[in-house]
Amino acid sequence: MILGNIDYAQEQLQPDILDNARSENRGMAESFQNDEMLHVKQQSLALAEESGQIGLRRVFGFELFDVRDEGNCFYEAIADQMQHVIRHPFICTIPHSTAIHDSLRLRIQRNDFRDREWAEDQTIDQFVREFPDIILSIIDTGNPEVGFVSYYLHDSVVITNIGTEDLPDRPIIRIAATGNHYLSVRSHPRLNMGSVHEPLASLTLYTPYRRMQSEQSSPISNSNFVRRHSWPGSNPRF
Image (cartoon, rainbow, N blue to C red; front, side, top):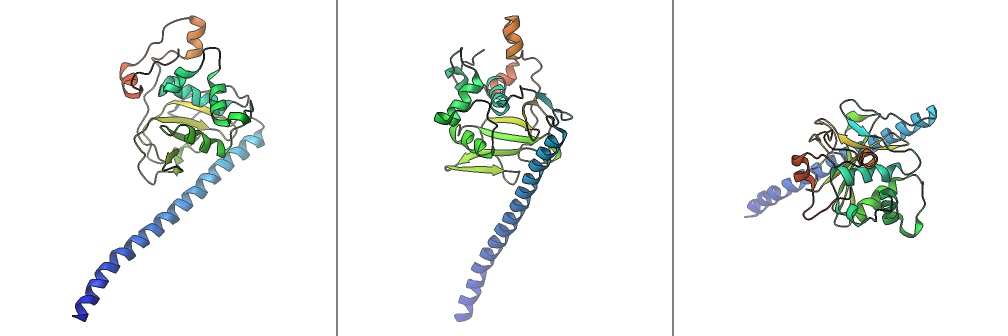
C-alpha cells in the first residue's frame, strides 16, 4: 500500500517538474530575446545619431509610407495605419479641421499634450491602453530579420510579444522604427521571425489621403482589403 502511494506521488510530481522546467526555459528564452530586442533598438538609435541623419527609411520587400520627421512621426505613422490600413472608427470621431496625429496625441497625453515631443517606450504602453482593440507591431528597419515586436493589452497588462506565442485576434497596426523616426508599413512579405508572420497586401490601388486632397478625387479601394479590415458600421474619414 505504501509503495503504491509512492508510485502515485512520483507520477504526480514528474509532470509538475517538467512544467516547471518548461516555464524556466521559456522565461530564459524570453529574457534573452528581450535583451536582444533592446540591443537592436539601441544600435539603430546609436547609428542614426552618429550619422546625424534619420535612420534607414527602406526595407527590401516592404512598402513603407514615410511621414514628416518633425517630432510627430509616431502619431503620424499610426494615423496613416488607422486611416488607410485598418480603418479604425476613431478616425470618424475627429473633426475635419483637426489633424489626426494631434487627436491621437491628445488621446494619449491628455492634459500633458506636448506637440512634436518624441515618442518613448512608455508612449507605446499608453497607446495600447487607450486602444485595447488594437495590436501595435513595430519592426526595426536596420534589423528587419528580427521581425515585428507586438504590443497589446491582456487583462490590464501590456504584453510584449516577440514571437513566443500567438497574437490575439485583433487588427494589427504595423509601423517601422529607424531608431529616431517612425514610418507606416503599407505592405510586407511573409516573415519567418518575430510576432507577425502573415504578409500584408500592397495598397497600391488605394489613393493616399494627401494626394486625394490635392486632386479632389475619390479613393480607389481594394474590396477584399476593405472587407477584411473594416469595422461594422464604420465610415472612415476621407
